[in-house]
Every structure is written in structure tokens, then in C-alpha cells.
Amino acid sequence: MTAHFDDAILTRRLAQGTGEILKGVRNVGLLRGTNLGDAGDDLAQNWIARVLAQHRPDDGFLSEEAADNPARLAKDRVWIIDPLDGTKEFATGRQDWAVHIALIENRQPIHAAVGLPDLGVVFHSSDAKAVMGPLSKKLMVSHNRPPKVAGHIAEKLGYTMVSMGSAGAKAMHVLLGDADAYVHAGGQYEWDSAAPVGVCRAAGLHCSRLDGSELEYNNEDTYLPDILICRPELAEEMLTLAANFREANGGY
Image (tube, rainbow, N blue to C red; front, side, top):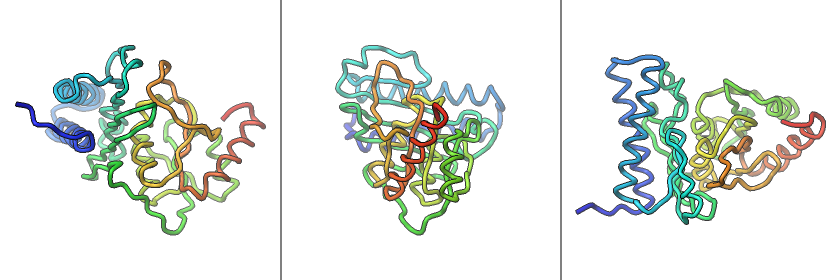
């Protein structure tokens, strides 16, 4: 008989177990580069899919590493997964990769977990708390695609931009107080932000699109190009600066 796990426990254990699988694949040293990244993606996806098929067979599913099944659009509950966010970072021995697990109801994450396996930690929406000490004056951006709007915000506020790989890693560094905000524009999908937003919002951080509108998940079109995660007292000013930049430049 299959043991029953509530949604919070299942979310956390999925992130934890996926991280252990990925570390195991990498640490034995038999694969490297693209082969290592592809193996990590495949094995993590397969394990998560099997767990959810056994424990939540009626729920919908959306993952970066699986073909999209439109049946999810009619489901009340949908798991949005990125088994390995930051495949290049994982495959090259960096620490800024993550595991994203989110359960969506009514287009919003109700349970979410972000695992940073190389740091040995899983952040979960049920107990996440943002560090609200002195401002760090740092702004997290993608090291592959730092958006111009982030440079504008950093310049106006006297911030230093810090680049990092995984969206989950960047968001968790805001939660930890290492940075005050994470700004991204272009090149993301729902699985990139669903879990980080679920954790950060539960921890008391501001999470929205760059125009201030609400982030919504389980859409037919999964492209979700821009995001602001920041300390709540900075949100209004950062959104205003983003709006000014867009008006002056015709985009972010």
C-alpha cells in the first residue's frame, strides 16, 4: 500500500530527492559536459514523473523536460516542474543550479520548493522566511542574458549587478538577503519562475511582472518573459523605473 504524503511534504521531498539524484550522477565522474547535463535532465524528469504518477495520478503536469499535455489546462491542480534549472551550470561544476517543484491551483503556486543541492538546502513555501536586514545594494541578473532594464534600475539606485545561472538560485539569494532584487526580461517560461515565486511570495517578498501585473501559471502559452522579485519596500520604485525605461526604449 502506498504511503500518503500531504502536498507540502511531497513538494519538499520531490526537490530533495531530485537533488540527490543529480548530485549522484555528477559526483561519480563518469560523464561530463553535454552528456552529463542531458543525463541529469533525463533521470531527474523520469523520477519526478514516476513519483507524481504514483502519488498524484489525477493532477496535471508541466515540465521543461517533457512534452506538454494540453489536458493540464482543464485540471484544478497542476505541477509545474523544472527538474534541473541551470543545466550548463550543473554540467560544468558550478553551484548555481537548482531544482524547481511547484503545485499550482487557480493559476497560483500553493506549495513550492526550490532545492540548491550543492548548498545542501531546500527552500519550501511552508517555512520560508526572507532575511530583512540592511540593504545589500545588489541586484541579481542572468549571466547569459542580463536585461538592459536591470542596468537602468541598478544605475538609478546605485546598485551593483551580480550575475548568476539558475533563476531559482538568483531568487533564493534575494530571500537570503544577499541581494535586494532579481530582475529578468526575456527568455523564460513558467517552469523557470513558478517554484521560486511560490517560495519567495510565501517568505514575504514582492513578486510580479515588470509592469506590476500578477504572475499567473498554467496558461496555454507557457512563455513568461519578465519578472521582478524584490524586497517589498523597493517594489514601487523599481516598477516605476522599469516603466520609465520601457516607455523610453519601447521594451525592457
